[in-house]
Image (cartoon, rainbow, N blue to C red; front, side, top):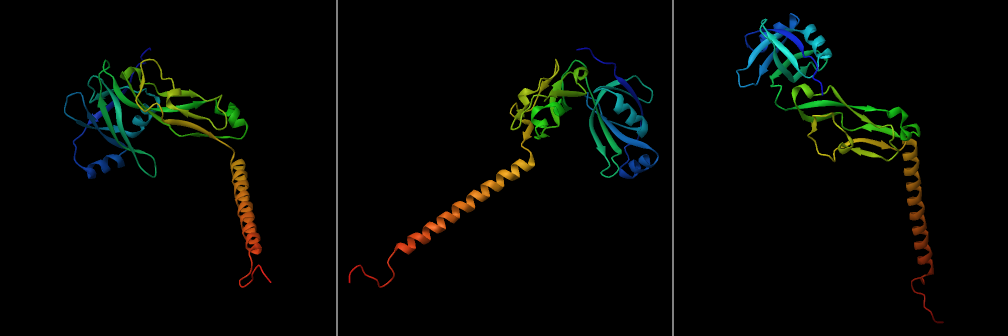
Length: 228
């Protein structure tokens, strides 16, 4: 697999001075962050929020992080914290990596061909149960997304992780029996089947009651005898 050219992100070193300083940075249009790993001390930095957003939207898994104009260091995003209401990034953690050592990462799973699947055309409900996959790969081999072709699924099908074929050099870390996709019958069909089952139960219960009444009617009344 060819390794794509890493995107460079220029940041500035900052003093780690607590939440109040972080809020001031955000008001000024910056995002606080910390660089970890590589056997070195953590480094606190700040980066322009718009630059960070643009970089993350166009970069692959690996980013060349340049601090105060120094040479780039290969990093991956360790954690991205977003504001619960606005969705803006309010903090980012980066992790130093070596391009010759495999690392763990999370990749989005993208379903392909769902609209053309026979089960969907017949009214079945296609549900993606698993949306992200845990993988291991060299930093340069981490894909932006892993695709799964679901164009042949039928109503009632359940697809597990062992049906997903990762790109070369990528290993899936999750259990092979993890459910990825299900195709359930149309809701109206399910409701109709439930109504039939309920009606069947009511009929059966009614027959049982009638049989009990008939059996009771065949018993001699209290005080009656078989003789004259």
